[in-house]
Structures are given as C-alpha cells and as structure tokens.
Length: 381
Image (cartoon, rainbow, N blue to C red; front, top):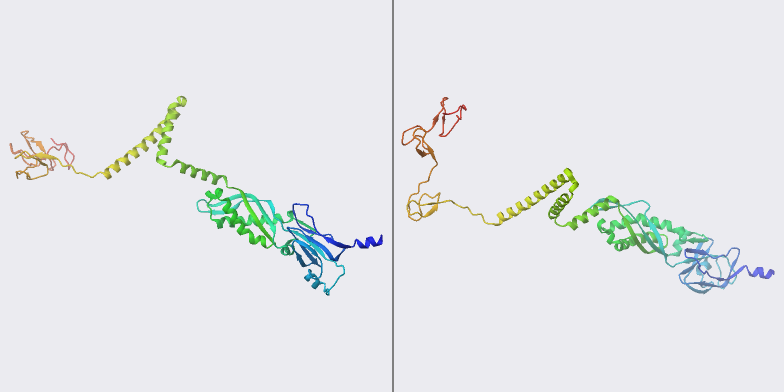
C-alpha cells in the first residue's frame, strides 16, 4: 500500500484530450508530483506543449509522441544543470496550447465610429460582425497575456480583441477610401483592409486573425434619408421633364377631386401655373434654339421704280435697271391754312405760304401737329 502511494507520485504519461470549444491554454496537473524521466509525452494536432521551470519557459514541443530525455529537453536540462545521462524524476509545469482556429467570435461597436466622407463630411456609423483567430506564438501569448493560469479560455481574451477591432475599424475605413454610398457593396473589400490593420495588433499577443466579416454597417437616419434623395434624383433623370409630369399629375388629381372646393381649385391653379411656366420656358428655349440655328435674313421693303416699274429696295436712290432717280417719299401733313397735303419737313405751305410751325403765346415755336407747347405746356390753337 505504501509502495502504491509512492508509485502514484511519478507521472509517466503526459497528454491532453481537449473536450471543450473555447480553451486556449490548459495546465497539466503536476501538483505534488514529479515527472519520470523517459515519460511519454503526446502532443496532438493543433496543440503545442510547453515546459516551464520555476516560471521560466523552457522547451516547446510540436505535435508528435516523445520520450522525455535530456536530449529532447535541452533548455530544461541547462536550467536544472543536469549532467548527461540524468535519469531521476523531476518537477516542471507542463502547459498545452490549443493552436486551432476559434471562429464565430462576435464583435460590434458600442458607440458610433467616426469617418470622413467626401460627399457627406464627417459621418457616424455603427457596425457588427464576426471574426476568427488562432494562437500563432504560444510563448508570446504566455508571456504577454496568460502567465501561469491553470486554464485560459477565449472568454478571457475576446473582450480585448473586440476593443482592437473597434478602435482600428475607423482606420480601416479611412485606408479603404470607400465612399459612404458604396459601403453596403464593399463589405468584402473593407473586411480585407480590416484584417491588414488588425493583424499587427493581434501579433503582439501571440495571436493571428484568421477571418474578419462585416455583417452590417448602419448610418444615422439623416444620412440614409439624404442617400435616398440622391438615389431618387438619379432615378428621375431629366428634372425638367419630371417637374412637368408632376405638375400635370397634380392638375389631374385636382380635377378629379370634386370635394376639393377652393383649396383644391387653388392647388390645381398653382399646379397649372407651374406647368404653364414650365411649358413656356420650354417653348422659349426651343424658339431661341431655332433662331440661333436659322440664318438671320434681313428683309428689305421694295418699291416700284417710277421709270421702268422694276421692284427695287426702298432705300435705293437710283434704279439698278434703268438708272432713274428715285425720290424718297416723305411723310405728309395737312397745311393748317389751305389743308393741302405737304411734306412734314416743310416750314411753309407751297400753296398758300402759311407758316407750318405753330407759334405759342410764350414765343416758342412747336412743330406741325403739336397740340401743346413744349416750353410752357399751354394748349395750341
């Protein structure tokens, strides 16, 4: 019985069968026990075994089956100052590190993240998704994070990793230079940029990010409304034609609304005026375009030559056909004395000698046909 108790103090087989989904590091139970030299060490796939001597990391074993000797534990042999051929039991802590991928780790922004957009300026947004990671450097993980904890799970590190993702997300968005309008169709590109930003920060803890997925990015309500308006404007196309269409629709609705009363009539009238203005502007534009496109032809009035009766320009002084002098016709007025039709430029009537200009009592002379004096304003007889 005493022999059995003594025998139980020596460890001959060291291995770890992981039956959990979230354990990163597991410490093999060696308390009050010694490891027998030539003991069997089994390291399964996606595992690494680390021997620690008095808090100092010694040898690290990759997946495989080992028989512990001084030859395959060179660091521990040196730390303990073992001589060659040492065959006695020894004490050391053994840690198994899980190096498989840990996926479906959820992340999300607690507070809005700021980004600068060329169209909308500074924009706040929220986002959430999932990510995956694995242990890439077990020694760095133990030194920086876990220490000599008996069991270390994903729950103990995920909170810190989420903070890294959220703090680096705005940097990833800035580096991607993706406009707000294109964020929804660029999740894959943004995820790739995010992994490039997060990887160096994960490496500091001996970890590597294996996947980063954005499930959704939500923008403030006012930004979404502005995006909807821009989309609507793009769908409308020609704004002038759309305005005319809207005015015509408003007139039709007002006409069909029999109970609209004065309000309906007013709306219909306003819509009609808007449509009339729009159509008028369109017609004016068309007329201007036609006038600009058509050659400007100055139409001259023509008269008959008094000599040969040929049609010539009214401004001609001689007929180009017969050379006849063409006298320009002047405006005619009636002589105030004999009522004879005389030229308006005449100062005296050639029939009766009447002075054509009208003399006012103030001494001012007014042209023929004047009814009031241009000097004093008195009525002329």
